[in-house]
Image (cartoon, rainbow, N blue to C red; front, side):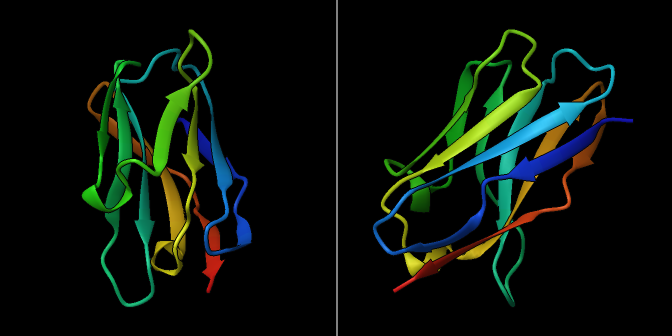
Length: 116
């Protein structure tokens, strides 16, 4: 069973930046897709960004040009989300997600609050 642990969330003013990290544990050395989702109060969980096979990225329209997803090692078991020019509407609980061999794992989520 793969466990995902998010870190790096917190409170930031509008226009600021945060970097989220997601560390995966377990025996999986390479994931098909790793990504970040978010859920704001009263809203459905939505995809923010994903990284497939370590190279192909996909972003929600609302974050294009502001957020960047990346991984920093060949094993592909750590993923980052660099968030710049943050807006109050980016406030949400952010969840790490990993897809591998037909399975899906979720982190517990981390809160990002952007004040105006």
